Length: 214
Image (cartoon, rainbow, N blue to C red; front, side):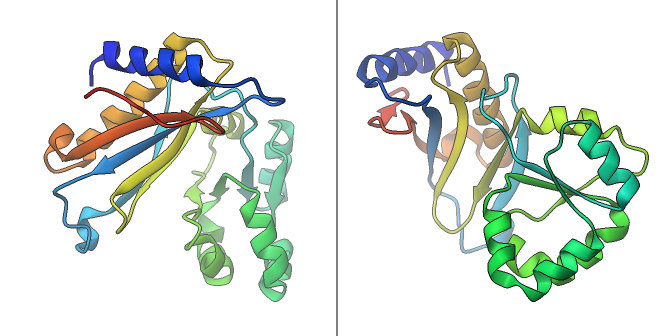
């Protein structure tokens, strides 16, 4: 996708965006074609690190023993889970669903992945929020900074990928760079690259969708 086409769409998006009492997100909707999504091997999910953060808080939850949780809190991570809290959520599914719905990403130490999968997998799996592994000795602060610039994508049986890529208070160049990063990653995951992309739309939270390119 040419940068010129993305720039043109962003310009039109801004011209049609009405002033709101909050900062709107900027989202992508990517239509997929000529991919047999009945074949599970053709579906995918991924976490893409984009060049610029989206200027909105990202809710990260670190799962681990107390020493890891302490490091996470020192790094500014707001949400954490230990074994006792996982056990509590296992017995209280309504609370578990409510908590998970408010979290963007989960990180877990390897030794707790099995427990998380067994006890919370039924809630995390359908939401597409199964935790990534936090390696032993990892810099928790570095991981927290990375997830502040991470976008999750999922291609399932519906041939459309939706994701948030920016906020309207970012510069055009920052938005364009984020859009390019996401599109490039998706193209590399598709069998025929850009030829498997039917159309691309960009929109603000409350604004109309604007098509990128022809």
